[in-house]
Length: 107
Image (cartoon, rainbow, N blue to C red; front, side, top):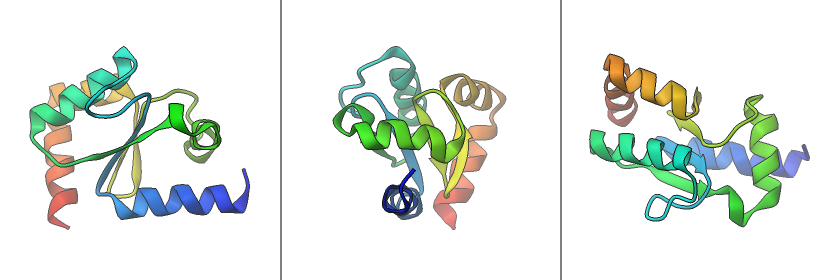
């Protein structure tokens, strides 16, 4: 990964309390896994931003290296990589995700 790309991703992650790298947008998810993440975050009623990896092949590949995670979507809360769709579903069902996003938004 180029230093420029790493800096670009760093800035995106830093500038957004809750950020999802996904296929499509929060208004129009382009895959089921991305849609799951959007539905969960919408259910929590929290503000979040998305980056459409289909629009940017450099980011699409770079985010996998950045997080050392092979799949998309990828969710970041307060600058920390949380995981993908399955992990988010699990955290949501346990009630841990709600707490995590509340702490992030309060900081």
